[in-house]
Image (tube, rainbow, N blue to C red; front, side, top):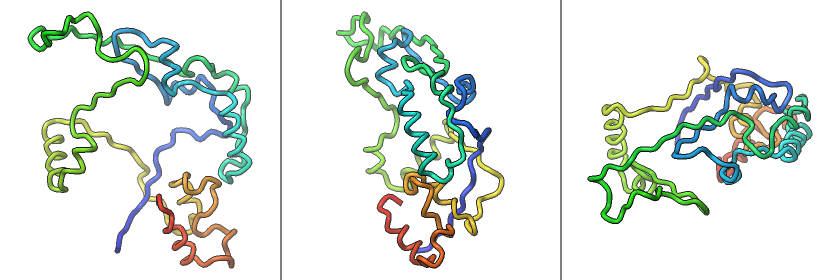
Amino acid sequence: MRANAILFANPIPKVYQTLPPPKSELDEVLAFIYTGPVQPTDEEFKRTPLLVSHKRISDALEWLKLNHIDYANIDISYDNIKSYPENSPPVVVSYHPQYKPKDALAKSLHDSGEEEEGTSSGPCPLVVHGVTGEQLHTKSLKSLKALAVKHLTSGGKVLAMGHAENPESIYNNPQLYPQVFPWLFPYGLGGIGQPGYYHKISELAHKRHLLMYHDK
């Protein structure tokens, strides 16, 4: 097996020395948009992961500062943590009413039009339009390429992620893999070429060890 891969850094508008960032700056990078016939309620906020727990943020940052070498020098602002509300999202929630009466010709005979589709309690139904995961397993590579070309030629939308102009070096860059795969290196340690591994394990043996990860 032979392969070549290069890595580009994602654009980072700002690197914080103090975490978490002030509540006033969250709106610059994060927002929640609701669409529907009514505005979201406090109960809906609790059913979706939009709320902030002061204790969990404090515990996570304290653990990172104590155990992760890339976070060893950060400052933890407990004042910023206290400024985050715990019963509502910490950022602006934008609501856009979206209600369109059903076409009379497209309605079922049993559709009175008085009730909205969906549920008011329990799991929220999710409707997916297009190719789903189950259908992807039955499609050949040629079919998937044809679907992609059809999507592009018909004016379909594409999500593009920007990156740095120059690729990252894989030489003398021991923090490269811990930063790319933080779930495999939760302590920021274990990268190829880190000083702590000198004269303890060869680079070849280290690479073989990393390739044994089941979720590499």
